[in-house]
Each structure stands twice: as structure tokens, then as C-alpha cells.
Length: 535
Image 1 (cartoon, rainbow, N blue to C red):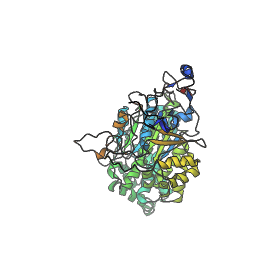
Image 2 (cartoon, rainbow, N blue to C red; image 1 turned 135 degrees about the vertical axis):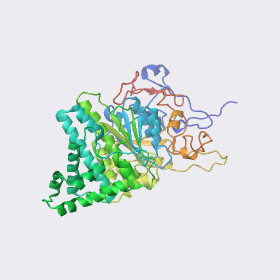
Image 3 (cartoon, helix red, strand yellow; image 1 turned 30 degrees about the vertical axis):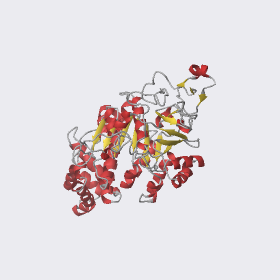
Image 4 (cartoon, helix red, strand yellow; image 1 turned 90 degrees about the vertical axis):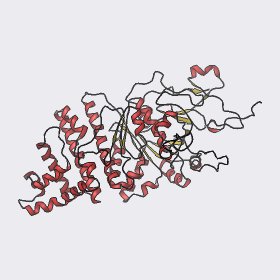
């Protein structure tokens, strides 16, 4: 029986009963004999292959580092992603993480809250560090990689790195006390802590980092160096009045809900040579906001300190230069945990170019910023979107898109398209599980350029590594594809496509595209040609 007449609709879907034609990608030299059946495409070809253009079917490539360093489409190597739950946001970022790792870029997930990325980091041969009660902790007073590298470098550069490490530790202690108190630490108390840290490092054996109980011991003893900072003038009562509030806060940390996580030696240090690093804090309960905030701050301090140490070694010519890609998923949780988190992320978004680091931040809506406690924090959080080099939208309600359009300049057609992706699936009469219409659909916006609407197809490898519905699967019942737990659930995009781990496979008959390495790694044998055509 002959197939009925039809023609492929937008995105290459089936219309009228006929399958869409197979598409192959080739250069103009290779496809010249197929004229006039060749069509040009303006889709960017620099970076990690993300998916297909919804209207042309062309492969769209991109990531913040490649578009900043090589293509120069953006002036800031950052990505901000918004969208309703369950539409594939973290799946798309997971693909960028895998693709960038293949080029030598080091993915850093500094506080994996679900976890969404731990299995991927393990598959890449990276390091996964768990933080939580009974699972592992971080010594806030340990200078970590920065201290070790400062000792290795020596000289003025080593002293400068040692001073920076001291400042990071001091800021971390101040942030932790601020979380416990609910207000910032007093200025004279920071001076006292700084003096205590110097005192301890001069007296502890080499290689032994101070601990919070050591700080309490020094405060009790009250050596002359510490008393001089408090201006006690030999009066014991004046000294105790100056240090007792700090003493009480430190006791509250050690004897309270944070003690066993931050009072002992660091369980596992970040490996400077690991191909990827994930600090997993998923075992901390969602209701435990204090510990979540403290763990996030500690993870970011430790991770960014390791980045600074890596660059210090490269500056001295001791190791090759490495670039980093940080991922902060479920942004709304750390933003609400403590004001110190907002300041930390705000500093990162302003300084990531100088740190040799790209970043991806993922949340649900702009309203997540409006829920913050102070006007200053809300203004800083809104600035994350304004400064992002790339803004990626999954399905969002129309009202949310109208608000976002005031920041990134969306056309009415783009607002209508993304709003349509937020609709729920229809009522299935056959009992089959129907996909939400917006799953795997994204709009990429860069400045005032027209947006790039894409659809993402995940592979079996990605589905196994990134399953955010795993808790909906019975232990003794393997999940079926398309059911909860199969990888096609929350935060997943449907169907199979290019496999960035085990090698790219054709997408809808389309040959894989080999693009040059964004940064930090060798380019593939066949570099991407921006003038390629689709036949």
C-alpha cells in the first residue's frame, strides 16, 4: 500500500502520514553535486552538539566556553537556564558537561543537591566527594589546595597565594557564624579570628591544619597576640567581653547541627588533577537549611580555591593551563539558604572570566529571586540573568515569559513558542504515558539576536547516567523506557540521539558533527565548517 502524501513539518516531525526525509550534513564541496537539493543553515556549529533546530533540522552546537573563547558570540562565559520542572533542563547542562569534559575542560559541580551529576562525574573518571552527617565533612580552617600549592611554589607568588588562602578561610568562618547567628559577624571579631589563625599556624606542626576546637582553646587561653587585637589593655573582663560572643557562636557550631560536619579534618580533598569533580550534598535534608547553606558555602570555597591553585601552578609553568565549567543546579535552594550564598554567586558571575571558568545556573522562574529576604539579595539575583552570556528557556508560563522578555528582549513569537511548551500533556485515551509537549525543547537567546529553538534527543548512555526519577522505580522491577525511572522522566528529554560519552550516533539519519575543542583540549580531526550545508 503506497504511503499517503505528506511533508515534514517544523522540527522534522511527521505530517500527513509520511516519514520525514533523511538528512545528512556535508561541506559545500562534498554536497555540490546534489544541487538544488541543498539548503544552507545559520545554526552555530561551535561547541558541544546540543540538538536539532526545530524549524530547519540543522544541528545546533554551543556552550558558554566555546561561544566565549572561539566563536566570540558572548562576552561572558555564563549560562542561565529557566524552565518548569520535568522538561529537561539539567539534561541539557549534563550534555554540555560531558562534551566539555571530552575537550579537556574540567566540570565542577560544587554542591549537587539531588544528586543529578554524581554518576556522570564517576563515568568520566572524576572525583565525587560526599558531605553530610556521617558521610563526610570539610575543615573550614584548612587552606586546602591553595595552601599546598603555596608551599610548593614558594617565593613572592607563594606568599601571595598563602595570603589569599588565609582570606578565604577567614571569610568562610565569618559566613558560617553569620548563618548560625542570622546576622553578619562583627568587624573586631573577624580581627580576632584572623589573629587566632596566624597564632595557630605558627605553632602547629607542618601539614597539620587548625580545627575549630583549636580556635576555642586559643580563645580560652588568651595569648598576648589575641588580647592585643581586643584592646583589653590588661583587663581580663574587657577581654572576655570582647571574645565571649564569638566563643558562644563557635560553641553553637560545634555542639549544634553543624558540628560533626565542620569540626574535624576534611574527609576528602579536591584532586587538582581529576578530570571532573562533584561535591555531593544530597544526603542533607531539604528542611535542614542551615546545614545546606554551610555545605554550599564550604563546597564553593573549597572548589574555587582549587581553581585558584591550579591557575597559580600554571602561572609558574609547573602544570598546563586548565579551564573549568561550574554547574549550580536548583539555584533557588542555595539562594534561599543564606545571604552569603547570593554574594558568593554574585562574585562568581562577575569574575568568572578572570578565573578561567564558565558557569551554568539553573532554576525554575524569575520569581525564585523575588522570594529572597532582602532587597539587596533580590537585586543581586536578578543580575544573574542580566549578566549571563547565554539565556536558555524551557517551557514557562506566558506571564513569566513576558517578564523575562523585559530583560533578554524576546519577540512575541518567541514568547508564544516557549509558553506553548509549558502546557501539560493531553488526556491519553489509550493508557499510554504521553510526554509533555515541551520536554526536550529549548530556546537559546544571546543578546538581541533571534532565539535558536532546539529539540534535544538523549542517548541510552545519558539516560542511564542522568535519571532524576530513580526514586519512582521499585527495587526489584527494572524500569521500562518512557516510564518513571527510565530516564525519560523528570528533567529528561525523549528519544535517542548523539552519544557524547561512547561516540556520536546519527540523529534522524544525520551524521554526527565534529566540532573543534572549545578550550583546554585538542580539536577533533575534522573541524567544524561554519559554511556547511544540509542536503
